[in-house]
Length: 487
Image (tube, rainbow, N blue to C red; front, side, top):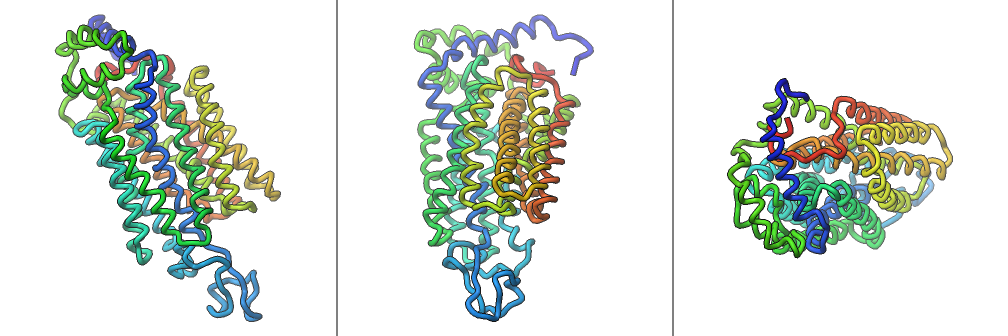
């Protein structure tokens, strides 16, 4: 929004000089920054594993007829139980182990829905204290601890109800892992490379996605519980690595007036020739910069008309992106293609998507790029729902998914640029929760059948693509730290 009165030259100078100060000392990417960004964004790997693990653990296994009383095309629930059997051991899925094949879609979708609902609640709770109380680093540690412990407990579940409860707990922890890691990583580098450093985060996500079908395939004839264990224990180890070796955001420390910690962090991240000069610049401005007030970030976001409008558009866009980003992989079982191979192809496609994001983000404006990607994904979804040949289906599904992944990656950067430091993590987490809410609709969309599901995905593409009309362009802008600066 354009203010009635232009900002004073003094405030504009203070804002630009502070940004220049950060850029002067941490603009040249060094090994310390690469290590920190890689470490704090690695949580994407475990977040993705927990988000898509139900594709394998909650899948309905194939079955076979054992006598002439049934035929392979028969409904399992309408034939004698002793006339058929599972093609693989019953322990490979919760459906077969707990005999849920006739429980109906609501019961079978309960674990996935519980996970997404937990993510929604956790995002609002954890993200707010990240901006106002405990900081970015501790948020990652706390979230990963909750997510990993919940994963181990899920493996110990004895029925669908305790299983769903622990999935809800995992969702609570998962809510802020990727969002906070993305915010923390970008706040550790200068503005010249800020939009491109996210490529590291985008590499972790497909690695998590690719590793998941590998783990599931290894235990395809064993218990589904091992998939949870071997995706949760590394996450537990990771949380301790961040606790002992991770650094806090220098921008957050500066706004919170934590001088000693800020000094240690900025010296650690600065280039070697700047390590002794940082005090001279920043601490002369310590009293000039307004402190991030002791107010919940969500309250701050809702108190300004411009931030409320941006937040509303971001939420709507996040819902559409989530429905496509999570819905397409969750709906792969509706296609006439091998489930392990199709998941692996979708996972592998995130790597070229990350590379294309790296290329596009520095060349094109955010709004026009997201809009074009939405059009490509929507058209691919519509055609995919109409064709019958399996190879054409998977090719169109991959095209739709890659376009949606690039749009999602670009939108993550876009949200970071739309909001100032003191509310940035909260805004990012709210966006991610909107994404998860859209993802929660993914199983329902998949249950609607292939044709209807891909029509829903096309409509979701239109939703997030249209939302950029209501948002300002941010490419090349200086990052603000306070609400007044952004306004």
